[in-house]
Length: 143
Image 1 (spheres, rainbow, N blue to C red):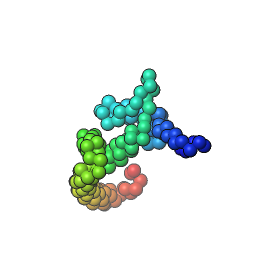
Image 2: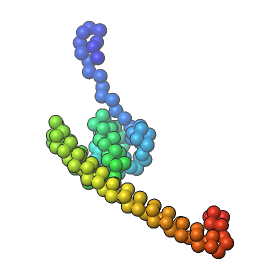
Image 3: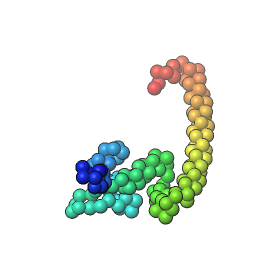
Image 4: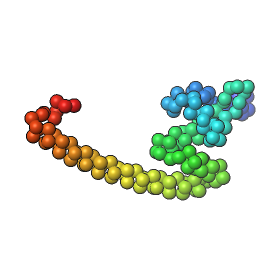
């Protein structure tokens, strides 16, 4: 911020409390503390108060996204560690691309398994409903 005299005074960095981040990311305080225990977050402390900076918030955002996408904490840690050693983020991006493609393939396999299970359940439902009808029972009243 430019002071009236023309001198430059840097604005203080924005910070967040653990409650702020929990509310923003819709996670529990316990989850955030767990990520700290795992070394994924390292907030500054003033007494017992945790103070999270922009870097912590960005890391938490990546952690939450990784969890949502089904990545393990070990994979998320590897991804975050790469960010620390490569300021151009090339290693991080290559790692993320490969993991994302692997995860997509795994989800595609799961989706196909679910589709097959649905077909089998539909077939089973038809067979049982037909059997009940053959014995004078309306299958829609059973449930």
